[in-house]
Every structure is written in C-alpha cells, then in structure tokens.
Image 1 (cartoon, rainbow, N blue to C red):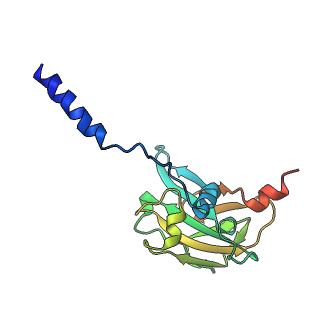
Image 2 (tube, rainbow, N blue to C red; image 1 turned 90 degrees about the vertical axis):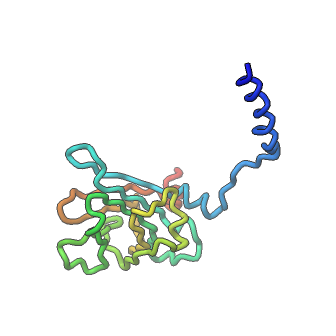
Image 3 (cartoon, helix red, strand yellow; image 1 turned 90 degrees about the horizontal axis):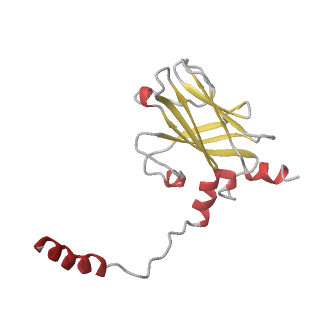
Length: 172
C-alpha cells in the first residue's frame, strides 16, 4: 500500500518538470544535404564479421564553393581488423601495403587524412572515433559514380553513389 502511495506521489514530480513546448529537432540545410548524400557499404569476412565499412558524402552536392571541375568526397573507412595498419595512400600508389580509392574508375588527385576534430567529420551521419576520415578529390566523372576501395588482401569494396548531378540527368 505504501509502495503505491510513494510511487503516485513521485509521478507529479517526474512529469511536472516536462515542458509542453517540445520542438522537433531540425537539421541545418547543410547537414540535411549531407545526410541525403551519405552512402555506405560493408565487406564481411568468411565468418560473417564486418571487415571494412566504406562511407562517403559527395561534397559537391553539399557545398557550392567546392571546385566543380573535380569530384570532392568526404570518406570514412572502418577496418577493425586492420585498425593499426590501415593507411589510405596518396597517388602514386607505390607501396603494396597501402589501400587506394577509385571513383568512376579514376584514381584520386589528392587524399588528405582528417584529424578527429575536423569540422567536415560532423557532416557524417554516423561518425565514430575508430573510423578514419579522408577528404579526397577525383577528376570529375560522368555517369553513375562508383567509389571503390582497393588494397592488399581484400576484394574491391564498391559503393554506388547517387549525386544531385545524377538525379538531374536521369529524371527523364
């Protein structure tokens, strides 16, 4: 009896502090464009565990100030089995122990590893401390853009992107 009396006296305290003026969370226009441009794919090993996760945002669709003579991407790579040795190299790809990205079959023009506090990382829908983040520029591609991670001892991990340019040209 006392238990119910005690609980019923706590209910007004718990719910009395709740505000009726709850506003829905609204993304900024930039983060909304980034979320709609976010794509991800994974590669599993023989045991069915995830060995690589490749995620990307096509930055040309997010920011208008990026040079449109290039394809600019924010790329996240999670490689739990290779976390200490994983390294995405810049062109030219000379070391066999490194990994490389291709976009539409073309090699990267530049690859920049991002620090964990870089503001670009905040655009990722899911961002973690154990993924590695890169800003990568490629020559501009036509047709359906396909991002491909290649490297030692892995089969290529392919991520098909849908870009704003793609949407405009394939509308009819």
